[in-house]
Length: 239
Image (cartoon, rainbow, N blue to C red; front, side, top):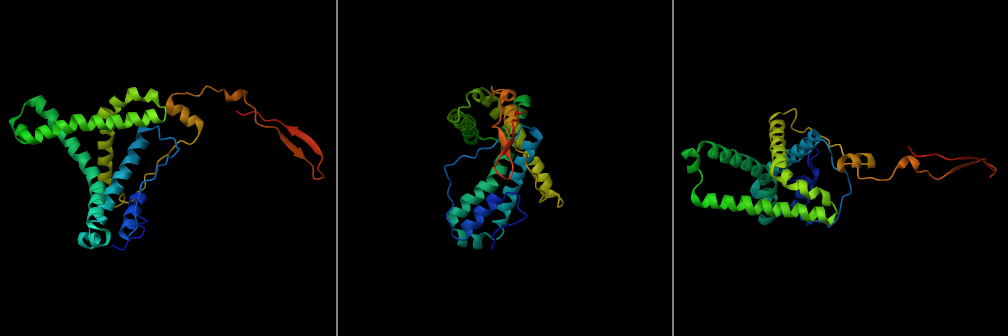
């Protein structure tokens, strides 16, 4: 592939990283922080996650279109890790949803047919991944919350990570697959509405601000004439 930038790709960062690696550049993670307010609406969150997943699938399919040529340019290990991340992310979501559905169906029906799908070794590996994998993921989120002093959010993480978040992720994948199957929606950019002001931040964190802005005054604005003489002083109070 001779890609530099695919203007139709809906995850331009993933596409650009692959294109740079394809042309011999080294991609590294910077230890930085992006200060922004995440969306507070479920509909917007699903749109954002579906765009990411759709872009991952798009980019992964592009970089596996001519695998031998791409491997020669990128290197086998870099290509493998890149493709596993892009294709593996939506695939793992799909497999997780199928596993949970089969698990619920098995405990509800005790069907021997479902039991035969999980031989002993696969069953034990799945249980280990379920327990320790999700526990590691939970600890990762707890550490991130503690680092940024989001102590009040920790108590909600178990509920979110074990119930709400997987459900929203599956819905996002379903939306991404639907749009990929629809040629008119294939390159649709579901733009995410982020909050950038303190009012939106208040809604997101439940009103933690304690400062009453109505009693705060902005600095006085002095209006002067062209000859340098001060004529009027205007004081404005913030709303």
